[in-house]
Image (tube, rainbow, N blue to C red):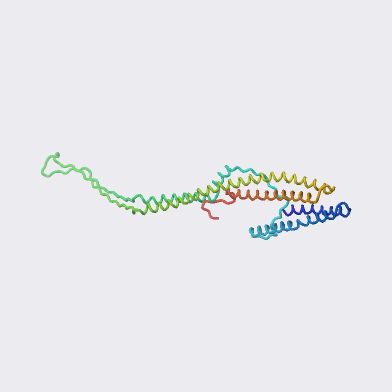
Length: 293
């Protein structure tokens, strides 16, 4: 912005010099020369304001980077933007998978579900059982007063025993803890759903902003070309005495406004792209591998 205003100031100073030469040659009056000089000096305040804004921006950047302003790079050339087409649907789906806050929210929901399952395990009684037994096979018992084997006894014996222990559920304790954990899970799930809705809304907003900025840039680009041609035509007419200082100043103001608008649009688009990268989760990652950096 400072360079644009300095360029316009240089043109106005050249115009003031030409008007001075014309005045000294008797081709114009003193009022035209004075008006051209005043117009050239009127940009001094705007140039100084742009220079202060540039210095403040460098100072703020140095504070954010915790380094001296002398080590910051100096921009060269013009600020240009390269049209970048973004796919809202695919980028939204990618953001839903990659954003660190969404990953963390889903992990919290999963952890709450697992905690609830652990708590509900208390519903099942604990039973410990042990069994033992003795078996005596078939054996013959001979009667003393009998001489026949058919009168002997045949017998077998089985002895079985069992012991068990069991635990009674504490009424209300398990269900209360389960309901409390369910409420915590619902809160985490609502937070996750809210984050997902906010991500979609934010990406949609930035996408619409990018479309509007692109349309504004296209319009300003055509207006800048027309304003440049108008300035050249008015400059020629002014040199030939066919245009007034007012017309020249109006053409210069129109050119300055269109170029300043292009510069602002380029900055806004760069800022919107940075917001887009942040919104889709390109700047931050969530590591769930258990490793602490």
